[in-house]
Length: 306
Image 1 (cartoon, rainbow, N blue to C red):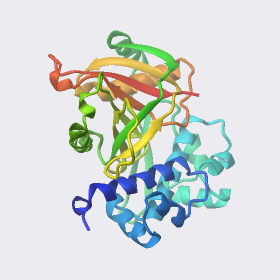
Image 2 (image 1 turned 135 degrees about the vertical axis):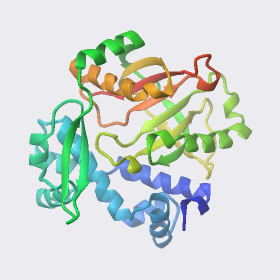
Image 3 (image 1 turned 45 degrees about the vertical axis):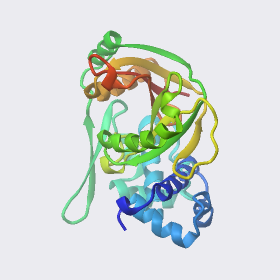
Image 4 (image 1 turned 90 degrees about the vertical axis):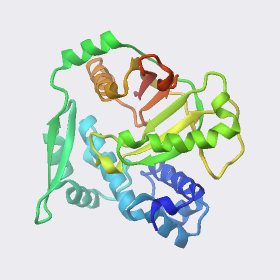
């Protein structure tokens, strides 16, 4: 069954289950509980999950746990490996170490010791004999250049963001293909009058890091901010983005400058002594770039910090 043949309702319900998984990786995740979140029987959920996501439920949970662990090991080097294992839901250090080595080709301790502390991207390859090897690509060469570019192109501050009530469509795949999710979101929102809200705002939430995850596995949410609550709608996901302390960088940029904007924002975070919180980064859009005279986005890049 191809994804294109699945109804929006089915995809949305599977998306609710995925959100539950991502928010509860530290817990024991049972098929029955996850299926209930999507309002499917366990049998039908297992089959539909694979059709929507492209991998089995068990593989998805294992991958998300390992990738979350890799993020902790890269960015929070003072946390003991045993605590990392516990944070991502492994019952023992030995089972965590085996799963991590199978995924990345090295132990968690080796991974933490060799991974650069700043501005690296994991490059994972598999040889003909199936052996996994990884390397770390330095993708920001000059810190001062990044900070100077940020200073010239943005206003950066640390503040509490507002609580946002969102309707969303899920997207899995390359970042620059998220437009299809926004197209579906607008088709849902327009006849219901949400595109006519005063000061309408869109939000992209990044549930995976392109530093760690395969580009084809990146999961994002394309969202619209709801000024008034709505009743349950099976075609759309609903969630609340809680108020949180964030590094907020305000830009007016072209679509081609987003990567540099995010990388420079993370440089600013580290150089100013902040540590990313265990919450997903997000963007808040204040305009339709098509209507901008220079085809630019007016956008806040928000990095939750501890």
